Length: 276
Image (cartoon, rainbow, N blue to C red):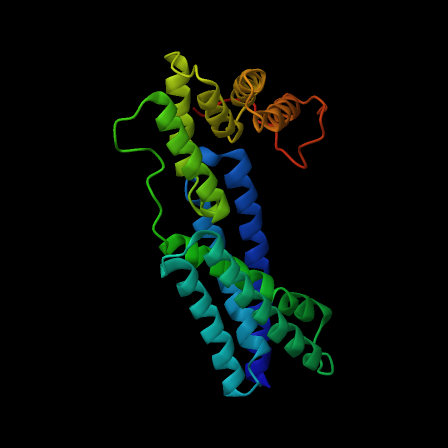
Protein backbone atom coordinates (compact mmCIF):
# COMPACT_ATOMS: atom_id res chain seq x y z
CA UNK A 1 0.00 0.00 0.00
CA UNK A 2 2.82 2.40 0.89
CA UNK A 3 4.52 1.62 -2.42
CA UNK A 4 1.32 2.35 -4.35
CA UNK A 5 0.94 5.69 -2.53
CA UNK A 6 4.47 6.69 -3.50
CA UNK A 7 3.80 5.63 -7.07
CA UNK A 8 0.69 7.78 -7.28
CA UNK A 9 2.52 10.79 -5.86
CA UNK A 10 5.29 10.28 -8.40
CA UNK A 11 2.69 10.01 -11.16
CA UNK A 12 1.08 13.32 -10.21
CA UNK A 13 4.46 15.02 -9.88
CA UNK A 14 5.53 13.84 -13.32
CA UNK A 15 2.22 15.07 -14.71
CA UNK A 16 2.83 18.59 -13.38
CA UNK A 17 6.37 18.47 -14.79
CA UNK A 18 4.95 17.51 -18.17
CA UNK A 19 2.57 20.48 -18.08
CA UNK A 20 5.49 22.75 -17.24
CA UNK A 21 7.44 21.18 -20.08
CA UNK A 22 4.62 21.91 -22.52
CA UNK A 23 4.59 25.54 -21.38
CA UNK A 24 8.34 25.76 -21.93
CA UNK A 25 7.87 24.19 -25.34
CA UNK A 26 5.44 26.92 -26.38
CA UNK A 27 7.76 29.66 -25.12
CA UNK A 28 10.84 28.16 -26.76
CA UNK A 29 9.13 27.49 -30.09
CA UNK A 30 7.09 30.63 -30.59
CA UNK A 31 8.49 33.31 -28.26
CA UNK A 32 12.26 32.85 -28.06
CA UNK A 33 13.18 30.24 -30.72
CA UNK A 34 16.70 31.63 -31.13
CA UNK A 35 17.57 30.54 -27.57
CA UNK A 36 16.34 26.98 -27.99
CA UNK A 37 17.52 25.46 -31.29
CA UNK A 38 16.91 21.99 -29.82
CA UNK A 39 13.82 22.75 -27.75
CA UNK A 40 12.06 19.60 -28.97
CA UNK A 41 14.63 17.33 -27.34
CA UNK A 42 13.99 18.83 -23.93
CA UNK A 43 10.24 18.51 -24.39
CA UNK A 44 10.56 14.85 -25.31
CA UNK A 45 12.66 14.26 -22.21
CA UNK A 46 9.95 15.66 -19.96
CA UNK A 47 7.15 13.82 -21.74
CA UNK A 48 9.23 10.66 -21.66
CA UNK A 49 9.45 10.88 -17.88
CA UNK A 50 5.70 11.26 -17.69
CA UNK A 51 5.09 8.34 -20.03
CA UNK A 52 7.54 6.09 -18.20
CA UNK A 53 6.06 6.94 -14.80
CA UNK A 54 2.50 6.46 -16.02
CA UNK A 55 3.34 3.13 -17.60
CA UNK A 56 5.09 1.94 -14.45
CA UNK A 57 2.09 2.78 -12.27
CA UNK A 58 -0.38 1.36 -14.76
CA UNK A 59 1.46 -1.95 -15.13
CA UNK A 60 2.59 -2.31 -11.52
CA UNK A 61 0.15 -5.12 -10.75
CA UNK A 62 0.04 -6.67 -14.21
CA UNK A 63 1.74 -9.86 -15.40
CA UNK A 64 5.38 -9.57 -16.32
CA UNK A 65 4.58 -10.73 -19.85
CA UNK A 66 2.40 -7.67 -20.53
CA UNK A 67 5.04 -5.31 -19.15
CA UNK A 68 7.71 -6.91 -21.35
CA UNK A 69 5.40 -6.72 -24.38
CA UNK A 70 4.91 -2.98 -23.97
CA UNK A 71 8.65 -2.41 -23.58
CA UNK A 72 9.50 -4.59 -26.59
CA UNK A 73 6.95 -2.85 -28.84
CA UNK A 74 8.16 0.55 -27.72
CA UNK A 75 11.86 -0.14 -28.33
CA UNK A 76 11.32 -2.12 -31.55
CA UNK A 77 9.21 0.62 -33.12
CA UNK A 78 11.81 3.23 -32.33
CA UNK A 79 14.70 1.18 -33.70
CA UNK A 80 12.81 0.09 -36.81
CA UNK A 81 11.81 3.64 -37.62
CA UNK A 82 15.26 5.03 -36.95
CA UNK A 83 17.81 2.50 -38.18
CA UNK A 84 16.39 0.47 -41.05
CA UNK A 85 17.03 1.97 -44.49
CA UNK A 86 13.45 2.62 -45.54
CA UNK A 87 13.06 5.49 -43.04
CA UNK A 88 10.77 8.28 -44.24
CA UNK A 89 7.10 7.45 -44.67
CA UNK A 90 7.62 3.69 -44.28
CA UNK A 91 9.40 4.15 -40.95
CA UNK A 92 6.70 6.55 -39.81
CA UNK A 93 3.95 4.05 -40.69
CA UNK A 94 5.76 1.28 -38.80
CA UNK A 95 5.97 3.52 -35.75
CA UNK A 96 2.28 4.37 -36.17
CA UNK A 97 1.37 0.67 -36.22
CA UNK A 98 3.32 0.05 -33.03
CA UNK A 99 1.70 3.14 -31.53
CA UNK A 100 -1.76 1.72 -32.27
CA UNK A 101 -0.79 -1.52 -30.54
CA UNK A 102 0.26 0.49 -27.50
CA UNK A 103 -3.03 2.38 -27.61
CA UNK A 104 -4.94 -0.89 -27.53
CA UNK A 105 -2.89 -2.31 -24.67
CA UNK A 106 -3.09 0.88 -22.62
CA UNK A 107 -6.81 1.44 -23.12
CA UNK A 108 -7.46 -2.16 -22.12
CA UNK A 109 -5.43 -1.73 -18.94
CA UNK A 110 -7.15 1.58 -18.16
CA UNK A 111 -10.51 -0.14 -18.57
CA UNK A 112 -9.41 -2.89 -16.19
CA UNK A 113 -8.30 -0.23 -13.70
CA UNK A 114 -11.71 1.46 -13.57
CA UNK A 115 -12.87 -0.87 -10.82
CA UNK A 116 -9.95 0.04 -8.61
CA UNK A 117 -9.82 3.00 -6.23
CA UNK A 118 -8.13 5.56 -8.42
CA UNK A 119 -8.78 9.26 -8.73
CA UNK A 120 -10.01 10.93 -11.90
CA UNK A 121 -6.65 12.69 -12.23
CA UNK A 122 -4.79 9.39 -12.15
CA UNK A 123 -7.02 7.87 -14.81
CA UNK A 124 -6.61 10.99 -16.95
CA UNK A 125 -2.83 10.81 -16.70
CA UNK A 126 -2.81 7.10 -17.42
CA UNK A 127 -4.98 7.68 -20.46
CA UNK A 128 -2.25 9.84 -21.98
CA UNK A 129 0.27 7.02 -21.97
CA UNK A 130 -0.30 5.96 -25.62
CA UNK A 131 -0.06 9.54 -26.86
CA UNK A 132 3.15 10.17 -24.97
CA UNK A 133 4.57 6.83 -26.01
CA UNK A 134 3.93 7.72 -29.65
CA UNK A 135 5.70 11.06 -29.21
CA UNK A 136 8.70 9.36 -27.63
CA UNK A 137 8.88 6.73 -30.37
CA UNK A 138 8.84 9.41 -33.07
CA UNK A 139 11.49 11.35 -31.19
CA UNK A 140 13.85 8.41 -30.83
CA UNK A 141 13.35 7.34 -34.44
CA UNK A 142 14.06 10.79 -35.83
CA UNK A 143 16.96 11.54 -33.53
CA UNK A 144 18.85 8.37 -34.50
CA UNK A 145 17.90 8.33 -38.20
CA UNK A 146 20.54 9.70 -40.53
CA UNK A 147 19.47 12.95 -42.16
CA UNK A 148 21.22 14.64 -45.09
CA UNK A 149 22.72 18.06 -44.31
CA UNK A 150 20.20 20.89 -44.36
CA UNK A 151 22.43 22.74 -46.85
CA UNK A 152 24.21 21.24 -49.84
CA UNK A 153 27.95 20.74 -49.34
CA UNK A 154 28.59 20.66 -53.09
CA UNK A 155 28.75 23.57 -55.49
CA UNK A 156 25.43 24.06 -57.32
CA UNK A 157 23.61 26.71 -59.27
CA UNK A 158 21.20 28.78 -57.13
CA UNK A 159 18.24 26.81 -58.56
CA UNK A 160 19.83 23.45 -57.77
CA UNK A 161 20.82 24.63 -54.30
CA UNK A 162 17.29 25.82 -53.57
CA UNK A 163 15.86 22.54 -54.85
CA UNK A 164 18.16 20.65 -52.48
CA UNK A 165 17.05 22.82 -49.54
CA UNK A 166 13.43 22.38 -50.59
CA UNK A 167 13.84 18.59 -50.57
CA UNK A 168 15.50 18.48 -47.14
CA UNK A 169 12.81 20.83 -45.83
CA UNK A 170 10.09 18.45 -46.96
CA UNK A 171 11.95 15.39 -45.64
CA UNK A 172 12.27 17.05 -42.24
CA UNK A 173 8.52 17.60 -42.16
CA UNK A 174 7.72 14.08 -43.30
CA UNK A 175 9.80 12.62 -40.47
CA UNK A 176 8.99 15.40 -37.95
CA UNK A 177 12.72 16.12 -37.57
CA UNK A 178 12.07 19.87 -37.49
CA UNK A 179 10.27 19.33 -34.18
CA UNK A 180 13.51 18.20 -32.55
CA UNK A 181 16.07 20.33 -34.40
CA UNK A 182 14.89 23.77 -35.51
CA UNK A 183 18.46 24.81 -36.40
CA UNK A 184 18.01 23.10 -39.79
CA UNK A 185 15.13 25.42 -40.67
CA UNK A 186 17.19 28.39 -39.51
CA UNK A 187 20.13 27.39 -41.72
CA UNK A 188 17.92 27.04 -44.80
CA UNK A 189 16.21 30.31 -44.07
CA UNK A 190 19.49 32.18 -43.68
CA UNK A 191 20.92 30.79 -46.92
CA UNK A 192 17.76 31.52 -48.90
CA UNK A 193 17.70 35.11 -47.69
CA UNK A 194 21.34 35.45 -48.71
CA UNK A 195 20.61 34.21 -52.24
CA UNK A 196 17.63 36.55 -52.44
CA UNK A 197 19.67 39.59 -51.38
CA UNK A 198 22.15 38.77 -54.15
CA UNK A 199 19.34 38.72 -56.72
CA UNK A 200 19.99 35.08 -57.65
CA UNK A 201 16.44 33.78 -57.31
CA UNK A 202 15.13 34.44 -60.79
CA UNK A 203 13.84 31.16 -62.27
CA UNK A 204 10.20 30.26 -61.54
CA UNK A 205 11.13 26.89 -60.00
CA UNK A 206 13.70 28.57 -57.78
CA UNK A 207 11.11 31.15 -56.72
CA UNK A 208 8.76 28.35 -55.69
CA UNK A 209 11.45 26.53 -53.70
CA UNK A 210 12.55 29.75 -51.99
CA UNK A 211 8.97 30.74 -51.19
CA UNK A 212 8.29 27.48 -49.40
CA UNK A 213 11.45 27.81 -47.32
CA UNK A 214 10.66 31.44 -46.43
CA UNK A 215 7.10 30.48 -45.54
CA UNK A 216 8.65 28.54 -42.67
CA UNK A 217 10.31 31.74 -41.44
CA UNK A 218 9.81 33.63 -38.21
CA UNK A 219 8.49 37.11 -39.00
CA UNK A 220 6.26 39.15 -41.33
CA UNK A 221 9.12 40.10 -43.64
CA UNK A 222 9.84 36.44 -44.37
CA UNK A 223 6.18 35.71 -45.12
CA UNK A 224 5.84 38.84 -47.28
CA UNK A 225 8.81 37.82 -49.41
CA UNK A 226 7.51 34.23 -49.60
CA UNK A 227 4.24 35.56 -50.99
CA UNK A 228 6.01 37.71 -53.57
CA UNK A 229 8.14 34.82 -54.79
CA UNK A 230 5.25 32.35 -54.83
CA UNK A 231 3.07 34.86 -56.67
CA UNK A 232 5.81 35.31 -59.26
CA UNK A 233 6.13 31.54 -59.69
CA UNK A 234 2.36 31.26 -60.11
CA UNK A 235 2.33 33.86 -62.87
CA UNK A 236 5.16 31.96 -64.57
CA UNK A 237 3.05 28.82 -64.72
CA UNK A 238 4.14 26.74 -61.69
CA UNK A 239 0.81 25.06 -60.70
CA UNK A 240 1.66 24.16 -57.10
CA UNK A 241 2.82 27.72 -56.41
CA UNK A 242 -0.75 29.08 -56.37
CA UNK A 243 -1.68 27.47 -53.07
CA UNK A 244 1.68 28.49 -51.62
CA UNK A 245 1.07 32.12 -52.58
CA UNK A 246 -2.29 32.01 -50.81
CA UNK A 247 -0.84 30.36 -47.71
CA UNK A 248 2.07 32.80 -47.59
CA UNK A 249 -0.25 35.76 -47.95
CA UNK A 250 -2.49 34.55 -45.12
CA UNK A 251 0.51 33.88 -42.90
CA UNK A 252 1.86 37.35 -43.67
CA UNK A 253 -1.48 38.97 -42.80
CA UNK A 254 -1.87 37.08 -39.53
CA UNK A 255 1.70 37.90 -38.50
CA UNK A 256 0.81 41.57 -39.00
CA UNK A 257 -2.30 41.21 -36.89
CA UNK A 258 -4.64 41.30 -39.91
CA UNK A 259 -7.35 38.79 -40.90
CA UNK A 260 -6.39 36.16 -43.45
CA UNK A 261 -7.96 36.18 -46.91
CA UNK A 262 -7.85 32.59 -48.13
CA UNK A 263 -8.37 30.82 -44.77
CA UNK A 264 -5.35 28.55 -45.17
CA UNK A 265 -3.92 28.99 -41.67
CA UNK A 266 -5.28 27.23 -38.62
CA UNK A 267 -2.94 28.88 -36.11
CA UNK A 268 0.02 31.21 -36.25
CA UNK A 269 1.76 33.09 -33.45
CA UNK A 270 2.53 36.68 -34.33
CA UNK A 271 6.20 37.63 -34.67
CA UNK A 272 7.36 41.18 -34.28
CA UNK A 273 11.00 41.00 -35.36
CA UNK A 274 13.07 38.87 -37.70
CA UNK A 275 15.70 36.56 -36.24
CA UNK A 276 17.53 36.16 -39.54
